[in-house]
Image (cartoon, rainbow, N blue to C red):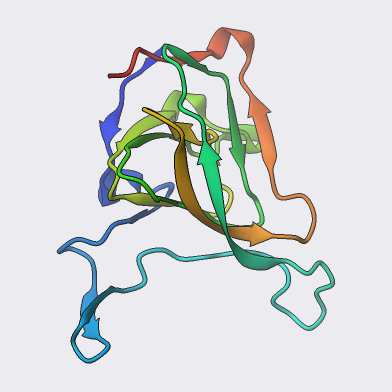
Length: 176
C-alpha cells in the first residue's frame, strides 16, 4: 500500500502527540521586559522512573541532537517503534521538512496498521510523540538533518520494535 502524506495539524496529530509550533494559535505572552515572546507549554514531557524516592533506575528527561540521513524514495515502511516509558519530542534545527509515520495501538498491544498515517512536517514544526505512540524512526527528506530531541534517558530499555508481516509492507513513493 502506498502511503499518501497529509499536512501536519494539531487536530490530525492529536491522537499521537503534540505539534510543537510557535504560531498565533499557541498560548503565548511577553517575558524579559517585553523583549521576548514565550510560546508556552507546547508539549508535555512525560516519562516513568527517576521521579520518586523509591526509584533506582536513574531515569531522567534529557536533551539530545539526532542527525538523520536523508532517505531514498520510494522507501518501504516495514517497522515501527515506540517508547513505553516516556514521550519523545523532535524539533528540526535546520530549515528542512521531514516526514512522520505513526499508528495507534491496536489488538495484542501492537500497532494498528490499518490506521497507519504519514504526515508531511514543515521546517517550523516539531512533534512530540506521546508515551507509547508507535512511530517510524526519523525520516529526513532532502539532506542530512539535525533535530533537537527531548526524551527519557537511562533507566533500562525504553524501545519496543514491531516489524510488519511481509504482506503488510507500506511504501512512501518518490519524494520531491
